[in-house]
Image (cartoon, rainbow, N blue to C red; front, side, top):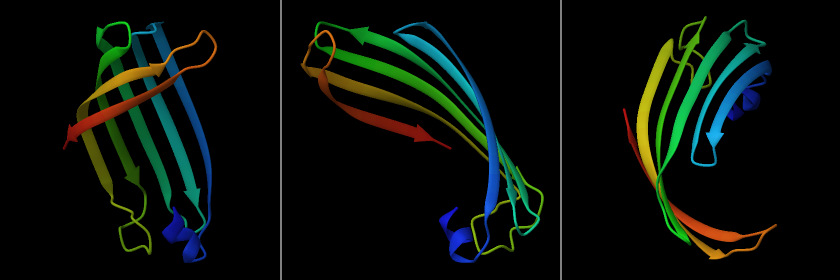
Length: 118
């Protein structure tokens, strides 16, 4: 985190992730991240999402997403960077997009995302 670096604290990290794509319309991903801070704090984070295309036409699409994030730290929250003992987030979202310039190898599109969560 930048606030940790500004306070002279650095961290080494390792991450691993796995994803499965049924096709271009559905996918699931799960990732884990471990951070070892120089102030003896250790953080483990887990993140996952499920994405499903809900509607498709020639140039427009709507995709739904479910996601979660959880993390925990070994030291208390009395740190110069954001460091809650535990946190959790769950959310859902929609992406609506429009294909402006289609081509076989390249394309240009724009999209609007709407997310909500706890």
